[in-house]
Length: 431
Image 1 (cartoon, rainbow, N blue to C red):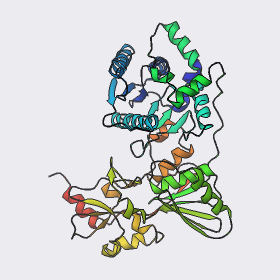
Image 2 (cartoon, rainbow, N blue to C red):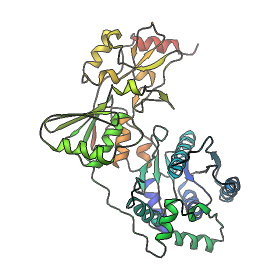
Image 3 (cartoon, rainbow, N blue to C red):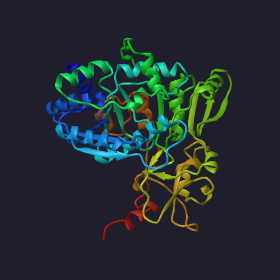
Image 4 (cartoon, rainbow, N blue to C red):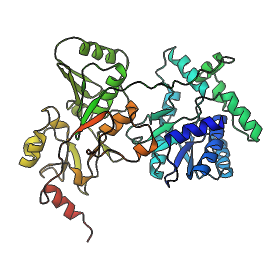
């Protein structure tokens, strides 16, 4: 078990770098066993761990569990940070809401610490339980060894690594017992009100399935510097869903009947224009183009969240400037800005970010000197499994270096030295 866990960590993570590896530590048996194994690996490989604990505030014992996790991290010499899910809790869909809140808190803390990978203690039993739940209508995703953080944009450039998927929960408890290490048992794991507990009870005595080791082969796609995706018309459902959510900057891929209906339309002959999940999908011949649907802005105006605008671009606007879509102000842009946008499909132009100092000021097309960087290519590459190691996450694409199987069509978003961006740059230079 130890050798297998080390091999999985070695295959994904870098050695002898200062950047920490985050680990989710609840204090339960799975996460505690992972902390034990990961600590030994980190010492041998010159890495630092950062233990993160999330208090969901759902049990009167949760504070005690956080204290237990903090003490455990201290025994292993790992820095510890306690995180809390505060505010009102939903009356329905509590497990899903708690899971989303947990991942959001973990992602923010990991990014603040400079980590690109979060270790999770899922086991082979979790694979079986997730399969059981999906067979009964759950939309829970598949448990994968390596996957992007499920929250966006907080989880950008973050991957989840589950190195214990080949190990049973019972084997981890045996390991902890042999090591004399106590752990916490959450009563919710035995509460039949929750699907996870029902799955666990139904699967008692059955052998956990081995993890799937053959990843799907991703389709070849092209992403330009403003996040327009071009792909072959015939995509499988997985690649189509990923292309839609990445082009739209959405939080989660579409699924179910709507996705199947779009796939069916694309399989039929003739041109197709469709909108799904905030993305516009255009098919002509054998080619498929996906980009943000500008019509969505009236219904849901885009905002700047955690340094990300509309889920598609990292952007650091100068002080005093607001960010808005180009929709409605295209005619007020400079000739140079309109010339740059003219290289894009007409439907894409209104979806680009512009900077506005005040209502009467002329809008300025956002460019690299304001820190503009598209996130679409990196997000799509990680979601498709093209970024399969920590080292790739630490070196995001810049529009010059394509990911394997995911190429770029460059669009120069830089400006001449004396253009509007240079004026902004001067205003923000230190005195």
